[in-house]
Amino acid sequence: MIGSSCKFENMGSRESFNASVRHVKATISFAETLGDGVNLADALNKLVDSKQVTSDEVLPFVSMLLVDKYSYVSACRNLTTVATDIDALFAEAAGWKAVDLVVVYHHPDMGVLAFNPKNPTHRTLVDRLNRFEFATVYAGGFDKPVDATLAAKAAETMLDLMSGTAAKVDPALLKGPFAYKAPAAPKAEAPAARRGPKAPKAAPRKPGRPSKAAPQAAAPVAQAAPAAPEPAAKAAPALKPGARMTPMYAVNVTNELFHNGNVEAWKRIIASYRIKHPDLEVLVYYDGERITNLNALFKWGKVKHGNVIQFAVAGEAISEVAKLQRYLAQGASNMYEAFLRGPVNGVLPLF
Image 1: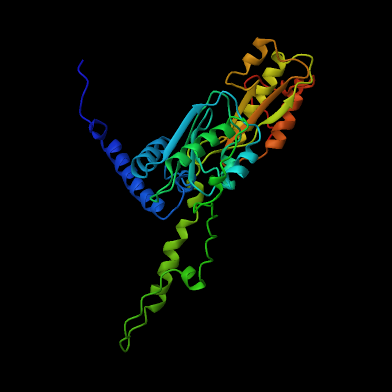
Image 2: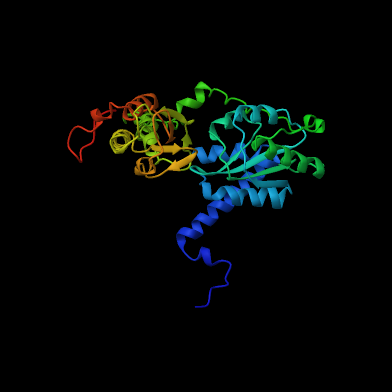
């Protein structure tokens, strides 16, 4: 079979064509935003949160704008070692004024993340750094000239910090025009602006005819009423654009062995949580590895008294994590049998 050589093949359907058009429009809008000196990751995550941009578009935006348009210098590596103090990393980068920085990190659970290491609010995007995951740092100055050698040194130093190794920061990075500035809070809307559109002026009333001014003035209010349910329609499943992940929570195994009964208790606890919160995902880790099948914790035979199992919750509107942690702690103890009662295929009303 001969493969097609048409570079526009992916635009052969209405869906892919419309997706391409939306991406092109977003790229042009981002180019204008970067022209105003706004960090790409700052602008990008706002649209990811509002679900106007998907994670699949992160890398094309970075390549088109930072690499092709603004010629940012980049450095990349697989993190064989990782920093444990992420707060210190952000605190260090906040003082680098000589270059603009964007970090692209391939999170093992959340996918591709782009963050600004100078922006303290982006700390919530990075719950942890994982060994052997891929990270790229881009350094430049938008459309302003930047010393390429200094930019390359900034990118490599940031990777050193992410790797948890001692890195000497060049003093030249501490001076320059690219200091982080928090976005200004939106101004309160003027009262007149919140009143909605003005009612059209009533035509001069002819003698003997009733005035229609009252129905005309009430029309805008009637049209605005159905907009109330809109926030509920924006809900999305976990691990979708706009999803976030909690820090890792530790659960100590207090039973003599995390055996099959403990595994079944954890399954029922997590199932109960997912029934109450279907848009949230519970991620379980042991020894730094994501556990997609809880039975593996029992089959290994290595999870014993005193070991620690970790978990995190991913999604939007995350809640009842402390309650989930208490139940999982009990499920990892010798009191796990409380969660095995009831119908075999039933779901416990724990949450």
